[in-house]
Length: 222
Image (cartoon, rainbow, N blue to C red):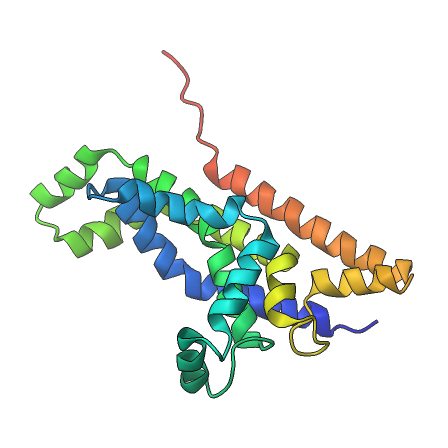
């Protein structure tokens, strides 16, 4: 069985998690505690990939990243080639499609940190950066781990957006979910079954990680 779709999917999921991590932490923290005009619109924009049909999101990304557009032409010069039908293109698409899966759990984790904890850190002489690094991040780690787990699993299973941007090119943009579709179309059900089992297992493990990291210990009453 060809292992290329597995390797490509793992590579895509890995780099999506690496690149989205700092963006999700900073955005989640800003949405959790920030008080600024347009905050509701920002939260709606983060949620948009979650409610849009993947093909709709993929279509707009395809138009935006096309070499015929200003953004696509700039990106082609920057990356040395067009983003559409390339690994870089599906990576950009994956980052955008996974924004709600990464940001929302981290935002909720930062919101759960009591404000007086931060104030106590400031009173103790810690700077904003020290408070963020030594207090906020350790307390928010369950949400951070949950966001990364959901992002990893969702990237492995993403179909519509990757198909629109990548074009299902074997060895270049054909991920595990796309390879599964091809195997079913070719009536190769044994291989399709193995691929489906891998995706199912990954999704189950991701959900299990989310539940384990977000579970709070029960404090017995006196």
